[in-house]
Structure formats: structure tokens, C-alpha cells
Image (tube, rainbow, N blue to C red):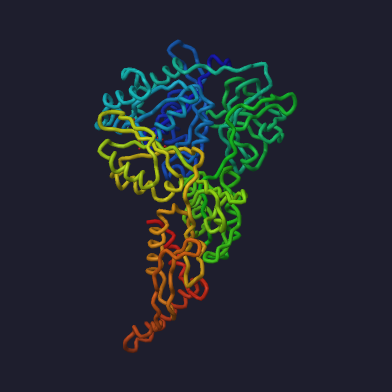
Length: 597
Ligand code: GTP
């Protein structure tokens, strides 16, 4: 295709603002999906995405469209993942486009996540087309939000398009505006090929399907290609486009978007952001922006039933085929047994992975509280990367570094006070604040990631009646006064409860955990002290008083069947006990203590 006739664009939108509905409507208008075949949510394929209503993996679809000038253009709609954990993947999808539709629900206004992705799109110099969706809704306030959008991107309110993805109103005009406003791709047709990978998906039948945007030159079938980040070479088995089903083509030229299949079986061999070139006579310079996936949040995952350990390992290996960012290493915990320390991009990534393990592999899991990665520099200048708080080094520590993020918060202005209080309590510093309209404010904070992974979202929602939204991106690290708090049962450390916290919060954490455990652990034959300690210094203590366990005394009278039942119950309970030193702890107690309600 002549690059002059190509338009590559994506849709930036908050969850539920109608991205999938709009995409479906565009497919329908382009005539590639017949009305009666029109499946709702064509672009969202994974079940879990549909269930949770989020798009994790981006894909691309080619739409032929005859514009007002009677010319038929090729529009490539590149789907972007919509969540904070996937900023890097979003940035790669954006880098494959020249334009972006900023889609905002006309009854809701813009959200923090959309705003953060808009900033990303502006950094990539994309042409932004502001669009209000759902104008058919009685609650829509298009004038108000058109003014807001105009203020944010610096255009006239009349430049903001108004559509209803549901009824189709305004969607054809939108496609014409895409043709008019989004610049066609430019590249060197005669140079060695360079194509950027913006997505990579594992398919059970085909192996890895890699989505690419060709920048220079031409990629053809049966060509040997090289992955420039690693130098690995592969044979190209198939090149194609999605329209809306996969269709083979002979090759892809400048500005074109499609997929390739090389037979590799693991997405880590075909990484998002990498540059593909020819194996011989290839390009010498990679396209900019490649990063190795870097897990930001770690958690220990343990099977509830120890004999499921091999199942868990297999399951993690399977998930990794399709998830280059997931990492795991075997780990043993005195309290929880055999499991894995897993690394994730963020909390949602963790939650999705855990849900998939439980659902697709029928596993029951316990996970330790999520933690970030600390870089600990000792006085003798040696360095430790700590992904498990119980492995925080002892001894002479010079500096502890923790990851920080730049957060964007959006909320009705009445909540500025509560948000500031929360962010202050979470060691945040305010970088700036703007009123988007009279009653909506954007606040920008630098915050330690550790404070966000610890129930920040819940706190934010409850303090703002659910009205505030937050988005963040990694922003390096900072030195902080952090200490490890250990929890001890009768003098024995319970590794699963060790936490790295700011010195000012160590006491509060210690008190909370010891209280929780005192309530959760049943009395034993002897008194059990529950202590929290920083190093060798005890900062909080509770006692579980001794009791002679005589369950049968509860059964006054001679109801023998009831007695038997109780005995059996007790036996069952015993089986699920873990020993910490001499103390019997029911597994339930660990689970409850680890869950952050
Ligand atoms: P995710 O896939 O979760 O990111 O959401 P999305 O942004 O793709 O939103 P989706 O298209 O699933 O739409 C969310 C809801 O809004 C659905 O119930 C749609 O039917 C509804 N919706 C989308 N567009 C319109 C519209 O123009 N008018 C009305 N009334 N409802 C709409």
C-alpha cells in the first residue's frame, strides 16, 4: 500500500468509556464485518479481559475506508492496553501510530488514566482527535466536557467531535476526520527493513503471534529475520494482517501494520518494543525506546495444598509463554511451605495472574503482601536487591533505595483536602495542581511505589466516595529511612509477615500485626508471646494466654454423635496446622492475617 493512503491510529479511553463499542462500530462501517455477524466486543478476545472489562493485550485491525474524497484509505486501528501497570506496552502501541482518538464519556468527563495516556501520546507527537462518546445518554453533558477537553489539549470546544458508538451517530464523520487529520506514515522504502514489535501473543496452535509496525523497508514471507535486542534470528513462516480475521499477505511495507509468525514458542523471544530487521544486510540501528520488562511488585505465591506445588510451577511456566513480564523463582517459607517469589508489573498484573492461576489451573493459593524491590547499599559498598522483605540484610546499612512513581490524580475539587491528607500520610510530595474546570482538579504527586501497593486505591476510593482516579508511572528511586519489621511467635520469626516499612510507621505496623495474630491464633497449652521487632529491638508485644484445650467440655450431656463430630473437626483442623517453633498455627490464621481488608 502507498504510505500516503495509510492512517495508523489508536483509541485512548478510560475503562467503560466505550472503546470496544466504537471499534466494533468502525469495523461495521468499513464493511469488513457484516451487521449480522457483528459480534459484540470483537477486539476483546481473552475471556478474562471480558469478565473484568479490561483490555490487557493490544491488537491491530486493518479497516478499508472510502473517505469524502472518494479515495479508499487503509486505516489501522491499534488497540492499546488500558491499565496503569502496562504503561510500557501502551507507549509501544502509541509509537506505532501517528494519531490518537481521545475518547471520553460525555456523562463522565476525562479520567486520570486517560489523562496520563494522553500525555504519553503527546510525548510521541501524535495528532490528537478529541471525541465525546455516549452523547445519546440523557445524562450526557457534551458542552461542559467539550470545554474541559478543549482546555486540556488546547483546541476550540467546537473541534471536539461528538459521537454515539452505540447508535453509530457521528462515527463516519470521525473516520473522515482521522483521514484528514492523522498524518500518513513516513519511512525509507529502500532501506533495510526495520519493524517495531508492539505486541506479542502466545497462541496454542500457532506459537507466538507478533504484531509489528514496519517503519522502513519491507518484510516478506520466507525471509530470515533478526531480533535486534538479542541478535537471535528466526525464519518468517507467515506474514498477515487482521481484517478482522487473520489474512496472509506477501509482505508489509513502510507504515504498514500486521502480524508475523516465526514458530517461536515463548513471547520472551519476540519482545514488545524490539526491532525486527533482516538477518543478512539488516539495519544497524534499533528503533528507539526498547526496554526489558521490569517487574516492580513482588509477592510470594504458595499453594494452599502443598502437593499442588508442581502444578503451580507448570502453571507459571505456561503463563510465562504469554507474559514476558512475569518472573518467578522457587522460594521456601517456614510458615507457608514451598512456593514461588513472583514478580509483576504492578498490582493489577498480580491480581490477574493470581486469578488465572486459580481459575485456569484450579489452584488454591496464599499470597504474601505485595512488596516493591529495594536496593540496599551496605557500608562496605556491597549492594543487595531485595525482592523478599524477610531477606532484607542485617548489619551495617549505608542507604536503602526504594522505587518512586509519578502519580496523576483526578477528582472533584471538594476532595482536594482528603486527597492531600492521604498523599501526605503516604509520604507523597505535591508536584503541581490544575483545575480542569471549576469543579474538577488534577493533582500530580511523587509517591513511593511501596505506599501505593499498600491499599492506596481502596483508601483513595473511600475518601473520595469513589470519585477520584489515579494513574502512575515509574520514576526512578529515592533514598528513604526504611527498616525491616519482623514478627515473632514465641521468639521464632514468621517469615511471611516480615515487612519493610518507613521508620515512622514501624511501630504502627508492629502493633497492627501483633494484634491481628493474637486474635487469629488459638490459645495453646502454653503462653505464646507475639512480638514485632526491628533488628533485636522489640517494638510491640501481645500475649496469647495459655489454655487447656478441652473441647469436649462444651458438650454437656451425652450426645455422642455430636462429640464425635467435634473430635473429627478437630482432627481436620489439626491437619491444616503449620508449626512455627512449638506453636500450632491454623492455616486460616495466615490467610486472614495476610489478606488486606
Ligand atoms: P473496556 O473494554 O472495559 O476498556 O471498556 P470500553 O471502553 O471498551 O467500553 P465498552 O465499549 O465495553 O463500553 C462500556 C459500556 O458503555 C457498554 O455497556 C456499552 O454498551 C456502553 N456504551 C458504549 N458506547 C456507548 C454510547 O455511545 N452510548 C451509550 N448509551 N452507551 C455506550
